[in-house]
Each structure stands twice: as C-alpha cells, then as structure tokens.
Amino acid sequence: MTSSRTVIRGGLVVTASDEIHADVLIEDGRVAALAASGTPAAEAFPAERVIEASGKYVIPGGVDGHTHMEMPFGGTYAADTFETGTRAAAWGGTTTIVDFAIQSVGHSLREGLDAWHAKAEGNCAIDYGFHMIVSDVNENTLKEMDLLVEEGVTSFKQFMAYPGVFYSDDGQILRAMQRAAGNGGLIMMHAENGIAIDVLVEQALARGETDPRYHGEVRKALLEAEATHRAIRLAQVAGAPLYVVHVSAQEAVAELTRARDDGLNVFGETCPQYLFLSTDNLAEPDFEGAKYVCSTPLRPREHQAALWKGLRTNDLQVVSTDHCPFCFTGQKELGRGDFSKIPNGMPGVENRMDLLHQAVVDGHISRRRWIEIACATPARMFGLYPKKGTIAPGADADIVVYDPHAEQVLSAETHHMNVDYSAYEGKRITGRVETVLSRGEPVVTEREYTGRKGHGVYTPRSTCQYLN
Image (tube, rainbow, N blue to C red; front, side, top):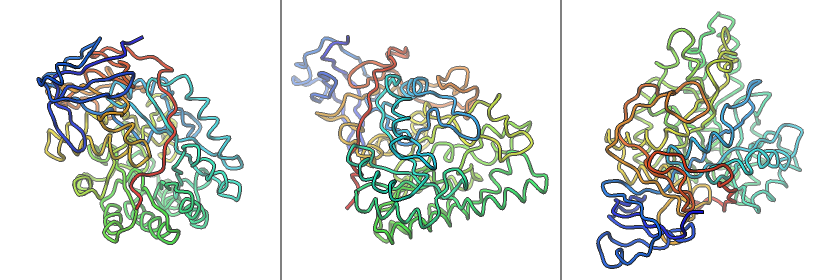
C-alpha cells in the first residue's frame, strides 16, 4: 500500500487555466490542497512521501478520449489488450482512456457493452470509460441509448464509412441524433463518404493500384469534408450536438469552423498522426507504407497548417490518438497486393503527451493549450471534469511529473505498446514523463513501472459539459 499523504514539491503546476510554482498535497487518492512553493502553508503540508519536482512540470494526467484496445477489425484484432494498452498509456503520461464498446449488427447495445466490460475489468493500469459504437439503429437500440446515458455511457459513435461493417445511412444517423438530443448524449461521427469511397477503391484495384499509398488517394479529403458537412446538417435538423472524430483534412476543418461560427454545438478532434505525419509516410517503399494506413487517412503535408491553426483558434478542441495498433508482421501484411485489406489503425497512446509537448517546443501551441487539448477539454467533453483533467482540490490525484528538458528518441525498441513498429521511429523530441500517479498511486516512478493491472477502475461519465 502507498502512503495516504503525498506531497509533490517545487514543480511548475500547469493546468489549462494556470501556471503556478506550487506544492501539491495528495490525501487518499485525491488532491487535497495546493500552496505556493516555499510559503509557510506549503511547508506545513504533512506527508509520508515527498516527490521532488524542482525544474519539472506538474501536470494533470492525460485523458485520451479515443482508443481501441482489443478491437476486432478486418479478420484480426488490435494488438494491445486493455492490460498492455493502459500500461503503455501510463508510460506516456495518460491516466484515463475512453475506449469504444461495439454493438454488432443484430445484437443489442447491452451485449456489446457487457463484452467490453469483460475485456477491461481487472486488467487496466489506469482508469477507463466507454463510448458505444452504434452499428444497428432500431427501436430497441434507441431505447437502450437512454438507459446507457443514465449509467454513465454518454456518447455514441456512428460511421458514415465502412459499408457492411459499421455503416449507418442518413436516416439511421438522424434517428440516433434525435434520441441524443432528448437524452443528453453526444453523437461522435466518423465522417467519410463510405459509399463513394468503396467505388473509388474498386476502381483503383481494377487499375492495378494496390500499394498502401492508394489508401490515401481513394479516401479523398473532399469526401471527408462532404460527410462532415452532412453530419453537421443532420445534427442541426435533429437539434443534437456533434463531435467529429479524427479530423484530418483542411476542407473538413473549414466545415467545422463554419458551423461553430454559426453557433452550433459542433466539436472536432484531431490526432497526432495528422499533425506530424503525411502521405509521404504512406508512400514509403517495400510495403512500409502499410504501417501508416488508418482512416481517415494521412493527408499531404500542407493540411497540417490548417489543423494546427484549428487547435489554436479552438475550432478543433481535442487531440486524441485513435490508438488501434496492428503489427506490421502478420497483421498489416494481410493487405499485401490489396491495400483495402490492410487493417486500418495506428499505435499512439504512449506518444500523444510527448508529441504535443514537442508542439509547445516548436511554437505551435502554448503550454496551457497543451494541457487543455490533451487533458481538460477531453475530460469536459466526455463528462469526467473536474474529477479528471485538472489539478485542483477534490480532483483525482492523476498527476504527471514531466521533465521538459529531457531528450528522447521515439522507437519501437523502447516503447511499451504491444506492436512491432513505431509510427515515429527515430523522431527526436524534447520532454519526457518521469513519474505518474493514478488516484495517488505511483504507476511510473522515476522512469520505472510501479503500477499493476487491476488498479484502473471503470469510471461512469456525466454528459458533455460544453452544451448550452
């Protein structure tokens, strides 16, 4: 057992709203008090355990609102289990994930949710919640949505992509949105025109265009923008809020910006892969491009400026990972000779906090904005704030001591995700997680793993805290 009182001393506490040199007192898993370092109040903090943070940042644990542990896809499964994936998340300074439970066509939401509870329970190193993927909209599904909101599963994902798998048509989407408008739920949308994309895939393969780079070419930015526009209008008709996941194209950002300028409750998320990688990676020779196949796809580099701008202007509010790793050997290779058979997804749950700190170093965003898009806003968006996402009295003591000066090289050799490659292999970055607490318990202690599976608990969520 850890001591019940811990003090983190001498660090720069950075939250979405403040930067203050303060000591943090933790009692029984929660933040009890903050006091300016060196003051009598801070000196009087009682502690069985002191964590020295001079010269370091003390930040809230990251909240990753978009992960897929153990997800079935394309005849295989995501390589990270809830055990390996949450351990890797902790190594990267993330202390809460919201994963996606899946309703299969012909089955109930409850069956899908129960199956994901069974995968996760007793296996997680950090706390977790669930969104619900709705694949089969019918009267029973709509009633179940109300029940799920009441028990803390308050967001529902739909797909305009993947016909025959997760796809919903506009009528099904409208019905689910109308239900969400009534029960306070948030509809999350994978916005790509899957029907049109399937035509382009078929035509590309018929021309002999089978390499991974064609994955990006057929999933056109205009078809992401068209679907984003359609989702916004359907949500407007239904009077429902909308959260568009993994926005990758500047044309889609423009649709979100316009909707928000019109005062609509529309939100957008992007991911590190769209901020740091591009179609150059998809075009890597010898099938290496398969490592970078995800949907929405990587875009030409010029789209990155619009994404960074969207993050600065708050037209994009959240950076999540869409962590869905498949090993290159034996999984990504299923698509040799046919890019449409490459499992869609990339690893990243361990890299997000570090990459976004690098964005601070590079001048793309401020320190407080880093914490806002990685911790506070996802916590608010998905009904976890102020329990998660900040350092304030009463909040869970999910806290990271972060060394902003340490340098590291990202590599599959040293990462903890259960996947045989890194999407950022060889990338040199400044900043590194040193110590991680989850509800006051040390999960990573001075770059050593001290956590355990089963420490992480299921966390029910309230509804989105941004709705007016």
